[in-house]
Image 1: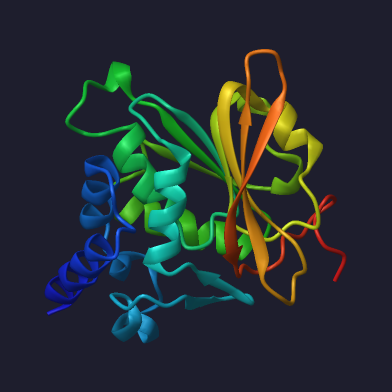
Image 2: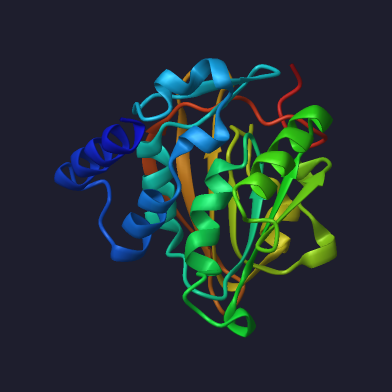
Length: 225
């Protein structure tokens, strides 16, 4: 039943033009949220709504994850930094693209996802391992507002929490030609999803992709709540 509901949701997102490219569609189809939400929230796993995962955090609705993955222009071999691991689901959808099991391991990219809440990082790590993504996703417990310099630079950076402004360390850790997505704005109202592209000369081009609603980014360069 859950599989049928997931497929129904996917068909809706296709009809509405949210899912646009074969790679993103295939990735979302291959990663039902049921493996990444608490047992008590299973009835909401295939719904297009955020799902609470504890610690004041939520896993985003499939619609916004699809929008972000389309905007990131992910490809096989991309090295990705995700700020805010949550339940691990968004990272899994990206791993399906950058490290497709249909491609040789030598061509795989990797997802590094940083989660500031220790218990949530452990939950994400357990979900990732149980779902079979342990060789494609690395969970780091730390302050993602400062990025993850150990593996920089990155082809893509995606921030899954609302920042008061764009953290400079994240821009610095983005490769030339790279793309970053980050919600920017108040932690209590809607924010704007900003897409940044770093050109070959280092210039940053920004594009506003519209209003979104995310939990606040915490850490040294996040919101002071």
